[in-house]
Length: 265
Ligand SMILES: *[C@@H]1O[C@H](CO)[C@@H](O)[C@H](O)[C@H]1NC(C)=O
Ligand SMILES: *[C@@H]1O[C@H](CO)[C@@H](O)[C@H](O)[C@H]1NC(C)=O
Ligand SMILES: *[C@@H]1O[C@H](CO)[C@@H](O)[C@H](O)[C@H]1NC(C)=O
Ligand SMILES: *[C@@H]1O[C@H](CO)[C@@H](O)[C@H](O)[C@H]1NC(C)=O
Ligand SMILES: *[C@@H]1O[C@H](CO)[C@@H](O)[C@H](O)[C@H]1NC(C)=O
Image (tube, rainbow, N blue to C red; front, side, top):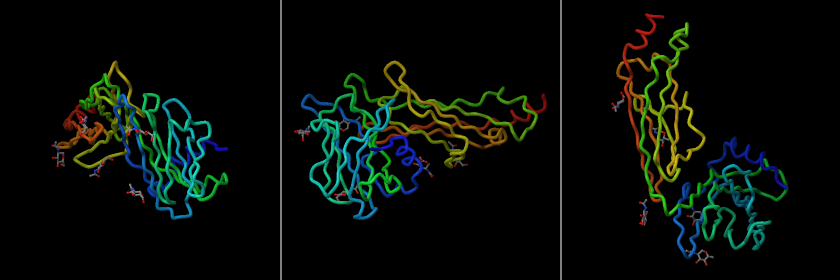
């Protein structure tokens, strides 16, 4: 009954996203012999008319799937084709709910999120999504390892031949590598101030042998890269299962290189 791509779109553009909160945002669990469970909480502040809660999962490379529909109006939750031994949910009141994945195994990894709505018709305009919880089932054979971060300076050859000086851009490359699991995010600062313009980060970390790596690029005007005293920092946040660690590296503007280049072109 649901159009999943449409829902995904809503998830991305919805400006009221902050009214539906999921906790925790990151969850990595080491499976035990007895079977571990992962529980995610969803709360919202849309009011008591929003008493319906949906739980979705997105597994890498697959479409988003609705796992369960819960409502305070009925004690039975609708799991559709999903296994009730694998998933359980609670809906104690209109403004909160929980979702549990039982007996964790590697196939349970993915992004889980909740949505809330007022009534059961297919009017998706009234559906609000939470930000998502990334669940990783840790491989006991792999050690938890934070990333090492390296920032590579722009190539002196980049855009050297562009006629219009104003259009010249320089690209800094940040590489975070050798980490496990892949719970990372990257942000950049120029002179200790966050920047988002010109930033392009890989959509996901990639596996390289047994550990992950991810890259991010920051494109700045050539004048910025060559202005004396300017510094550029790449910050990589890593969630180790208990806490978030930040690793960073800073490089400094190279003075004069741009001028020198402009003289010889
Ligand atoms: C996981 O949930 C199941 C069903 O509620 C329960 O029997 C089991 O003890 C839980 N496992 C852990 C480790 O809490
Ligand atoms: C969500 O609501 C429940 C029940 O009202 C409350 O116990 C819990 O602390 C709330 N969690 C968050 C993250 O607000
Ligand atoms: C980068 O520049 C800012 C602002 O000038 C300064 O506060 C900060 O200490 C610099 N960072 C480093 C690592 O030099
Ligand atoms: C910079 O961005 C990061 C990640 O989005 C955020 O956690 C941090 O608070 C921001 N810092 C400032 C000074 O805005
Ligand atoms: C997280 O905390 C648990 C319990 O305190 C501990 O056993 C585990 O080693 C910690 N993991 C990391 C990566 O620090």
